[in-house]
Image (cartoon, rainbow, N blue to C red; front, side, top):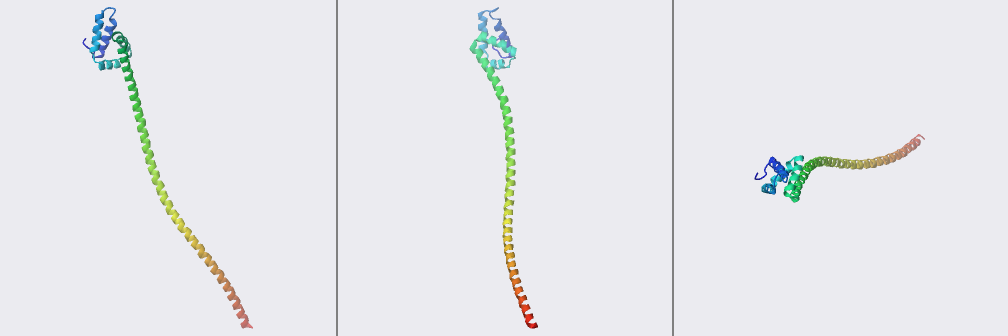
Length: 178
């Protein structure tokens, strides 16, 4: 095996590492370290991330045994970064959906506000027209009251003159009849 490129190759490497020390020599461990070192780190991390839980446990032990704690921590860090990114992506999608729903509600509220503003403006225009009509009617009423007052005064004057004429007529009839 020159380098690790598949999941099966990674698991075969892990099994070989776990056998070293019982059946194989230190030279075999160095060969396994070389295979790991020749493999692309990006590929190894992707294979580690994509492995199942039981496979991960075997890989953790094998990487620790063959490559040391620093390499193991690097792979574990990559795994948890990947998990965190998956959670962030899922939350981002949910947040994007919530954001789109909020924007939709905002657009609906804006449309309602425009409709209400138009209704308010229409009512304001109607109110102004009614105020003008009301003011005109008030002026007409004042004019009617003035005319009514003048007519009442004229009626009183005419009634007084009628009374005087009636008295004068009675006086003339009395003078003519005597």
